[in-house]
Length: 481
Image (cartoon, rainbow, N blue to C red; front, side, top):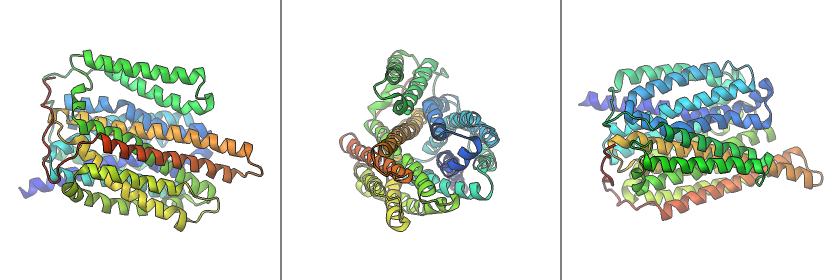
């Protein structure tokens, strides 16, 4: 029995490490962006796509990856996903131009779409629902959320002392270690469904709809929000997403059985995840640029500046299950996003001659507290009451909300920051480039704070209160699909 328990925690450690790589690969390149821009001669717009291509491909295909884990086996889909991720990372580090780099970043994102939901699905079926699973999910949440901050430090070290290409090469040995461990320790899982029919029309419409929406939002600042081109992109996205809903209602074996949204807290948690990650991912992006381009920090010093976050995150996340047991996750989800909003509002007052200890460090600590409690609580809420044969789907939905939220947030906020910077330079007498840049960051931080407040509002009105200490019961029976 002791061996079995030890293996369970070793399995969790391996899967959390895999998720750590997924989140880390969003943030690790932030510090390396200026070096990539110089080496590959990337324009500011293309520079954003180094991050957006990854999150967009991941978010677009996550529901397909999650459902594939349910249908064809969790371990099998995980192994396929991490193998492709390793190969894409290796070739990404060998990129010779910006186009190659961005395309391979999209391939990395596609790989995570199959790896990440399968990993979380394995965690969900390994631990019994209740406090035991909540503790496991706190480890998952701490490692996943901490990956963003650790990625900045690791990215700074690799960029300054080796080369920006090592931000991708580092995935190869770690990925191989995880792949070997999972193959040896995780039992092979075959489908719990009575069929293996994958809804390809549903996968095509939801993926293309999401990608078209994000692309339209990315291009809107340059084309104009009311331009025919922007309206065509966004209108096409809405049409494709509507076609997806119609298809899911009619399909014999839908990609996303709409019955899962009858679990109110699953729906609420996924809705909360969208604005929360929109706010948090953009914080890393803009703060990294501020430290390097305005305060002229080196890559390593920039990464070190974020080192406080994983420490505080770990403390917050490991204490979250006990707090959930005492007060339920609704109260935490109503409060933690407000804490994040306070941090972003504070960052919205950084200056050109900034002081790290006064203007950056305190909001980073506050942000880490909010992130730690938020990530763990939203994961618990999004996976409670979900039958085993839908665990991959629930994982895919949560991860989709995270990745699409990050992609949309970065697209919207970087567009706002860029247009605000341009207007400041145009209309302000004696404006300096640094002052204009900081002005653009201010607008992005303030809007990001608004996103976090929206997440708190969703928690207030949508999430159903869980009785403290209660063991949640499934709200729907396993589907016959």
